[in-house]
Amino acid sequence: MNLLELNGITKSFSGVPVLDHVDLEVRAGEIHALAGENGAGKSTLMNIVSGVTPADSGQMLWEGRPVRVRSPRDAMNLGISFVHQELALVPQLSAAENVFLGRHPSARGWVRWSEIHDRASELFQSLGSPIDPRVRVADLSLATRQLIEIARGLAFGARLIIMDEPTAPLTDQDAGCLFRTIGNLRERGVGVIYISHRLKEIFRIADRVTVMRDGRRVLTEDCARMSEDAIVRAMVGVELKERLEGRPASDAKDTEAIRIEGPVDITVHHGEIVGLAGLAGAGRTKLLEWIFGTGRNHAGRIFVNGREVAIRTPIDAIRHGIALVADDRKTKGLVLNASLRDNIALAGSRDVFIHAAQETRAAARLAGELRIKYAGLDQAVQYLSGGNQQKAVLAKWLFAGARIFLLDEPTRGIDVRSKAEIYDLVRALAHDGAAVLMASSEHEELLGLADRILVMHRGRIAGGLAHDEATEERIVRLATGGVN
Image: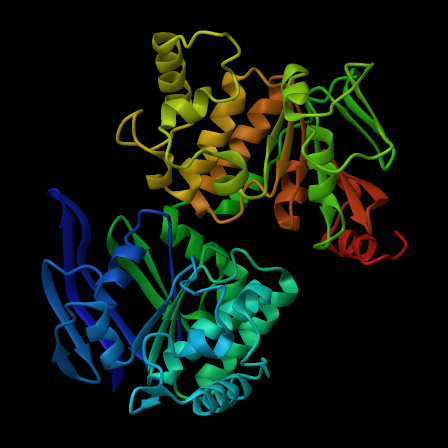
């Protein structure tokens, strides 16, 4: 018998259909991946399951019984817990207090603290992570905070846990800890709906995968019978590899665009894409932020178009045509409550006066060229999908006239179609003569895009690989301190 069963779930907002007769089944003890582009309807479907949003029509069954979930409290009482990407914890409280937040065991008005600490400790142990129940959440890693969210659901009898992009903010090591926790949930008979854009993760932990496209379920299959290409085809109708293979000849010119001398030595020419690989903590982000004037000062020198320049602030970098697409677009690249138009014009407005008409025309043109999906130029960027937010960051730098692009994990947390469009845009920038220095943890995209790949290890360049000699094995060997 299925733990959860959805039949013909339909939902529209303002007359626009978002879900079209969607079916979904999740078994007890099953890790069921939910894949699809941003806007495919995944979040709306899960909001219906968790009681945040009501369905217009359709039926939900819980352990074979028809149920109506009108609120998150109804979902919790059934045994459904939702671990959102933005964790709902109180940093100032302890791990145990967060587990039992709002439902502290008490007697005659007094909180039973010893029971809270003992029960929390037992939960953490059962999930394979002996967290001190008295430690403040603010002092814990993101992976440990996610485990506390999971423990909170189990404390109140969760039988189904929904996880929305849980590894997006995690290092590879922390993600491994989370996967072990998910394995423990499977052994306990808890069902998990795992939403992710990262296909390798789906094949690593999931039993079955359901793919959604344009508000419809297009595929449900055992992961053992699927391939990454098959999932991508189901999501967007094209294979992502097709956008990386058949790589055009390099457009690199002989003239250097930017040269770094110490703490590392790097040269990027006009029309060239240089990849920057390395493990988490290798120093890629620190290097790019230092070049852009936001990081800690180093004793290095920066040359732009052959002339040494002093870059102490981002304003200096912008004046020299340098752009940084940061690793976290929400905190470092955008003003979330500002409009799409204002975000695009943010770095290019250098006059004392605001030329509203000119900015509006330029924003509309760039939004169209980059195929940003938006309701209007006055729409706040926080309401755009992750892929469209990333395109807005790139549009900002195009508006500013940048010719040197520092890209830090430019496809992190975005759907497959947006990834493909970012790849096309990066190639178009190089074809137009821009210089691109691109840091990425996705070796496949570096191998498909870069003319050269530089590998960092402990803040230094461990080695460089030309496009025709680069392999994932050689990248990993250099990244871990081995010899090429």
